[in-house]
Length: 143
Ligand SMILES: [Zn+2]
Image 1 (cartoon, rainbow, N blue to C red):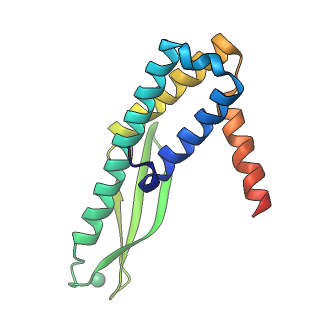
Image 2 (image 1 turned 60 degrees about the vertical axis):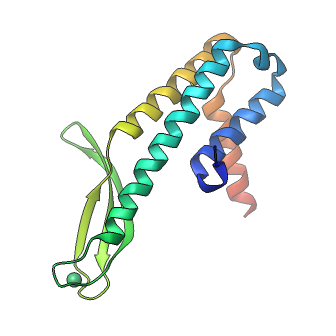
């Protein structure tokens, strides 16, 4: 996988490598390797969907004929439905348009991430999500 192009996959792999260094026995755990492969595959699929959405925005013209550019990201919940969209603004008239991301990739990745987290927690007592979070926070502080 070209993780250098995919920051999320990079973070996932980074976090998993850290866990694997602490618990070398994971290298022989086929269930773990299976869940990890699934998560990295789903993360890649999700990333492709995000890229495709951005490509669509760049190809879309405003009704005034101007070029749209992504300016913001919106993530939230409305009437029980999770939405994830990019706000694009026209470079000429500044009118904003929202582009919804497909949900499949996000849902698959989230499901795989939870399965892996639960497995690490249940079988090894490893708090993978917590480890990644504290890692990100300590790096954010250093910057
Ligand atoms: Zn416009």
